Image 1 (cartoon, helix red, strand yellow):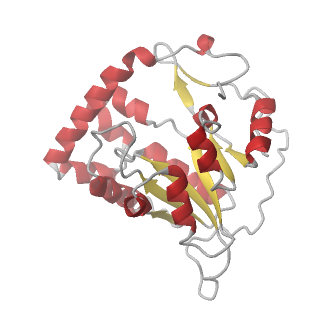
Image 2 (cartoon, one colour; image 1 turned 90 degrees about the horizontal axis):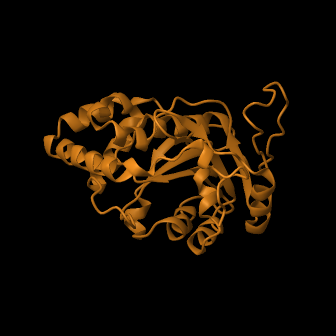
Image 3 (cartoon, one colour; image 1 turned 90 degrees about the vertical axis):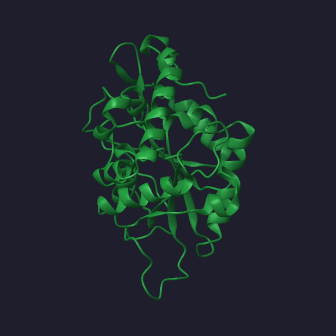
Length: 272
């Protein structure tokens, strides 16, 4: 397991890299004659409502820095909580536009959730069937994953993946402050052992684009989206109006939820 040390640690310290079997060569599409070769797939699920620059950067960073053959974006078909998402077909289209506009070779968009009708474990099980036998799936996620993966649905989901590729998220504090939640290495190692997971982290600082930022600044949404996505929305006044309504509503709901870094338990995020 590859766990980051505190951000204040010496950046020159060598870090042990995770060993992954049956890794690809970093290329995108399967080459001719290799159709039956086991593949390593990074699976990036989300509502993508809409896809923003943070999503794009995370997908590209994973493809370029982690031992995966390709990254697959999986827009959620039917969200368990949010009922006012933009239409599924439009969210899929915006994902495709974002990745093609970024020249993101080796990053694909899958409609597997529409085909399966379910998320997480069922989706992953079906997705795995689309690749050669013994292919491995890695779940691309934020560090809040540790808050839910030992709940029943989380355990079922983790059974379908080899490991996690985790991005350290910036959490909203009071005022304009953002912070990284502390990482409790011993708890994460114990969790990985219990779930038979390998865990890798993305190092370095990605520019901070997040769904929270988009929601908290609904009038400035263009600053957070790829140009191809912005143009698509501007060509669809009905869709843009729905997006504005969603952003305004979400911003109102989230306003009281900002927490201060001093409210975070010193042992790290809850893992119940």
